[in-house]
Image (cartoon, rainbow, N blue to C red; front, side, top):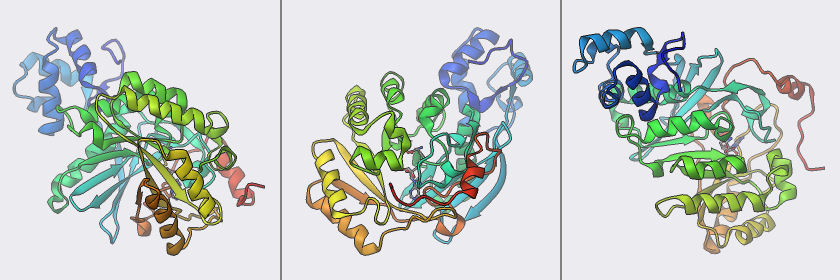
Length: 372
Ligand code: SAH
């Protein structure tokens, strides 16, 4: 929680409702002002405290001197032939991340980033190969949504934002506090008012933090599974060595039972040719998830430079899909979107200084294509 004692001005987009209440009670002793301030910021989209006309002059003067309206800097906007939009933005710490808007019928889903790069190193993900340079701040995360919703307002043929998913760059649960605060802001009626069912945190499986979510949020949960046995998952998602599948599924069950409504977990499964797309792999997946309240989202692998993995044929993808469906597993297959602007799943790379030297290592090494 930022206080008045810090030298830096407090960014408008860094505070939850609770944060504003605390912040304003230090200035004004009237925490109900939080509602007014947030409405001005998120609903009216005023650009300065001067326009917050129902606040007293003196409060406006104080707020003006201790807060700032600073969005991440927009570096580039590109629009795909399929209407997908990608924004590249500069974060507070100086690196660049990407967020992607995926319109689909009446739904507008924004895929946002939570970190500069990623500290995990999933073998089939372009972001992982870029290394890691740090966490995004709450304002960096919320700023991506503000930039997208401002854009949607002036492009009215798209309609309003309906869904937010943490499936851009980074592992949101490794940036836990900022992710939780950002979710509060997304779900708050005084800000974006998106339903808790439509704000989804996607994780590679950081088990202790999934358990922490039970006390902290009601957002929806997606888990990047990609394999139904530990040997294969260890290879694809190295984090599995620390938190194997059984432990991960237990944590997911616990999270579901902590929620006040009946919800499912989405398991993402990136289909990679000859790695996890066989009939046997489908059978194992059915076996694993048969009694789980879930949906499987198949994502055909999106190729990127430095990877020699391939996407399975359409025939193979639909065969895998049918195997799950015929066994009663709820399953969807994600069509690739925004391919022409490098905005598809796993293609987001941003631009930042890698602190792990992983990027250099990958550039000089031979790409790995099998478990052995
Ligand atoms: N760290 C989080 C969120 C970011 S990845 C997580 O692991 O869930 C978002 C999704 O894209 C994940 O399911 C990820 O496994 C998938 N993905 C990554 N690279 C991909 C690629 N090259 N092709 C298809 N899907 C990919």
